[in-house]
Image (tube, rainbow, N blue to C red; front, side, top):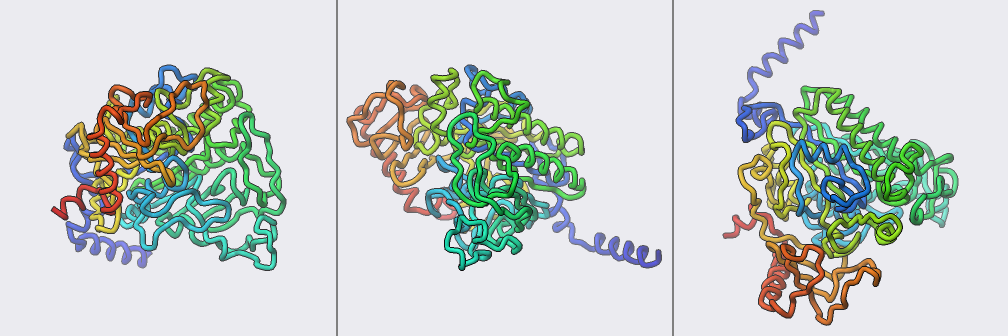
Length: 512
């Protein structure tokens, strides 16, 4: 007893002597728009869906045949952005950009393939590390797809890396989330890549001892599963329920006296499309629609967990998707009358709007007025600077080089975040650049995925494209011949941003 009393006395003395500035910096966010006064830093939850189209969000698409009641509710309780963009049209690069505040193409292109190395530049500050330095407990639960150092556990005597004996599964795997700012990780890395098993932190939980056997067979599209070892009894349809269960449990373990950051990247509605029995046939958009409906229900479970444990009122929730829908969306239009693109042109991989204009919702009770809809031009790279401003973190010049602070917009202090432009790219050509309502593409087409002829798009006789999205959101009318001066202006802007190495306002101001 005497030892506990002595410890309490020492703790009290330490708290009294702690400089006021340090205490405030650690626990008090900047004043909110409604002058709530000093409070503990808010919890932060980022929910990142996988291959969800702009039109797969029923509140955003009146023609949608997929109910998304929980996402709709989240939007009604916060702000919904209608002109928000991912950095890339594919998985890995968008995740890098989201977690760093830097355009992916400044680092690389393409995805991390099976057994791929970490997709990071040395010394890069991540969102998780920034928040951890500000006292947050951090977790990533779900699809990582940013690489691991599999070579650290490789058995070189087995030549075929897809053989179950090619790795020593008892060893820790470096290079994953724990090396980039996360205190905890749980997931299967990528749902359609080996190893098909669960990982917790840097360990394989169940050794994958058998070759891949796709089960259950996807109800729409191909499995898209790369060959490799699998844990015995692995079920593709068990992934999203387990990730949700883990996210709910992790929230339940958090304490009200320490802020937390949960990054919850879904593996759905990405292929393989495997809705569980409970959701089959619950939409008019086929199995994909059912899978999206199921995913929305999982969202509801995590939002309920925040409420159950008393965190909802002090938690900033952000929902978005990594890119547009997979190419099966074209068949879905014909087979079910549901267009995952909504009013946009293009799909995953494309530089057309449908490849990178994504759902984007922010709820922050007491700060973001409910029911707002914003047409401001924003990007997922903006989250890094926004959260840095929220927690009072002074970003170095070598971090978040393309990130804009959206905090004044979220607080209702402005409708315009002042974004000069957004650059669009997946890999190689085409490149696109957006300023105001104008978008310029430096190639005859923004398509990477082949567009069916029955969609009715006319061939482009020109070498480049120019569209006014205010009048032509579906990008039907190429105005390159009518406005060559605008095209030249945007082409010059694109090259300037590429060569400059940054576009963040704080860095632009420094150079003036």
